[in-house]
Length: 300
Image (cartoon, rainbow, N blue to C red; front, side):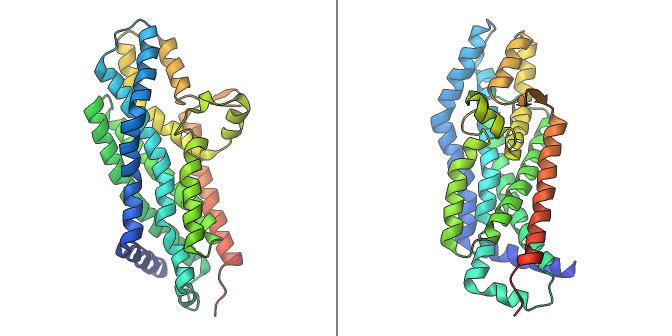
């Protein structure tokens, strides 16, 4: 345990000492927030306004703002929690490039402790960035239209923690096979560009073809996005009910924005989504530790 604490402390200090890694991780959610609020907010607003107006209810700007804010921040956080983890996990590859990994492996440190040292350090660094981004997102929602309860805010933070754990485990496994900064940068670019589509952050999964929806329903990141959607829009849906919108309309909107996910035709509840995400994190961590025990750097 002492060795693990020392490794985590060392990795976190090196992360914050390297201004390039820190600011790259920090600027990612800020850029996404600016881009989403600038280019996508109007699209979301027109979509929600059209859907609610067709139901015949009273559509207020505050209600539309709450819809847009919830959709926007859930998309942003779903992507940032994973992409920031890849940015924060550059230290693992940098140690291979600089040769520092050789110094670590000749010390009496178990491969599993070395692996978890990188994991927990990346988790801490990524959480600091993503929790700060969550605070900014909630401030944006407050400016647009606040309908969230304290419990829903806590659940949003819980979703962020779970998604960062997932992103850190995924980036650790992929980073295990990389040995240059160019490789991890290329992988990070691919993840940043593609992950948002396959998890339903850039475009709702409900708009994909039936075959692609079936494939995406097997991906754990999809359920993390849906959890954020449910908790960010729960207050808005509650307000719709108070204003007299039919339950069928609210349910249809939930289907359209991926609050309701279906696995092989069966609706997936929130407890099942949490189970899928938490189980995936546990499996990925076990695989990562096993890879380091069996195929990690040899002691010299």
